[in-house]
Image (cartoon, rainbow, N blue to C red; front, side, top):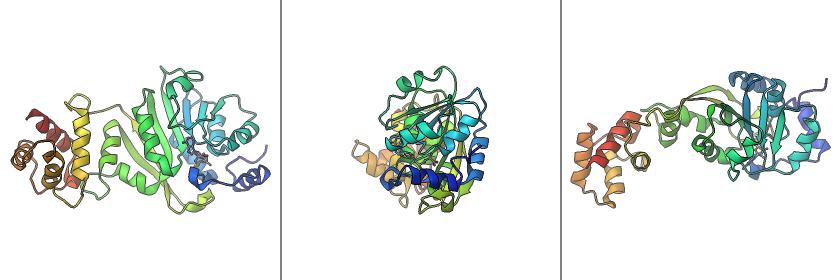
Length: 291
Ligand code: SAM
């Protein structure tokens, strides 16, 4: 049996044989570390019954490992050049489908319904293009797909923000948005040398178990919640009072209104957003609205 695609020698060979040149603009860094590949599939706990959605298969290193488990894999790849390559290198697997589309523009329900039973759970596994990590995550999280987990390689700096706790400098709108719908964990860090070409930054595998929105019923106005969170973190070094005064002043709230809102929510005026928990932001939102 030939070397797996993710073997560094095999990857170089494919790149050479097909005359490929990684496009920086598309965030192309091929994973060439068999330990990391194994770990990704292991931490995603893939079984033959699983339906797995991959974004950006590249030349198929992760796709192949997924296919080997016997699960069903559907991968969205934007780069036309890889479609022929994937056809060749994955020809022995009949449980893989490649869709040559920009995942951000794709109609996921429509495309996936061809291959998956959309009433059943779907897992996400991907080495994401780093320049659009958060837009892809949000598109998937906001979709109507029944996602149960995401196991994704991303810039470690972004993963650190996702798993941060309140009180840390990394705590912010991204941590809040993700932690409201799931339980994220960093499985492990991945150094630049595990990729070809090597990226400039350290990466990490983020494991996100999805629970559905845990706060669905206690937030009166979800749009307002997002506004309050974003306003609160607008200028991190400013107090929550100053940031809210700035944002909601334009919406007709006087400084006295803001003080009263904070008092009702039981949040000291001199706190910074960094110190506030998700529940603090929820009380704050509900107090803004109740007035
Ligand atoms: N999975 C491969 C691996 O681990 O070796 C490649 C990962 S590489 C970091 C990201 C992949 O996402 C590239 O193949 C790139 O062409 C693809 N990509 C970039 N933007 C995309 C988009 N908007 N939709 C779908 N795929 C995209």
